[in-house]
Image (tube, rainbow, N blue to C red; front, side):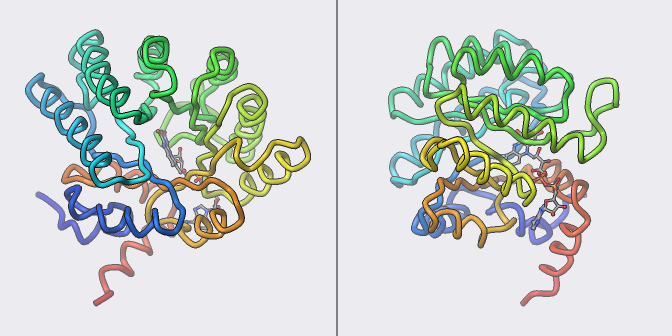
Length: 283
Ligand code: FDA
């Protein structure tokens, strides 16, 4: 059964690029940068993975032609990671060829822990070849991040730091929110001191306040990092950040395959369920 899109519209900007475009333009006018995510994950056949790469390439070209201030965020399982690792890497490199040619940027989202090692390995290969055109995401809740973060900082990687959105067992990941926040701060420090431009991705006031205070106290300028949030959440805060000289970027998902993303948003915060219910009663 396909659920109606109206359910997801709070968190998803449309089912097509054309539907998302006016929303992106409005945010850009407010000095908010964007990363566009063409939704989908876990592609199982080569034909769909090939089509996905073509769609991502089209997206880069559409962004370029529409002169949007937007990068893209992609998932390796959309590009065939479940089919064959090297095929997936080659697909990513095809996309990065276009990104480099247009002087654009591709962020590799981080998925569940089954994919962490392969995602980091493929990112490292891509970083060696494409440098500033590619970045990765690191999840503060994973125990292994303690080592990963230093290795990524050492090569000067472009890292988005988030808490982590997947349900992971306790031998792999921290479970308690206070512990996750402490880990987030520790990793943010590593990135702020050792990488050119870290991306702090959270809606959590404790982490936002901490980042603002820490960077002030350590003379890390507002232009040296950015805050990132998800479409549909705390837009006013992002507008405030931009007005106060912080770099602010909103992750804008779109596409017909919105259900897994939508479900993760509902699972992580009960207020998000109320947002969805309230949209249903809006005219
Ligand atoms: P969390 O949901 O933990 O809430 C903590 C506190 O923050 C709340 O108690 C409340 O005080 C405040 N808060 C939260 N939402 C609020 C709201 N809407 N309004 C007011 N206050 C609010 N994950 C992943 O595994 N891989 C990835 O690639 C990415 N990518 C990514 C990109 C971007 C731009 C973001 C913002 C997030 C991701 N994530 C992700 C998701 C991330 O891992 C995490 O699941 C969510 O951001 C939720 O964690 P938070 O820290 O944002 O707040």
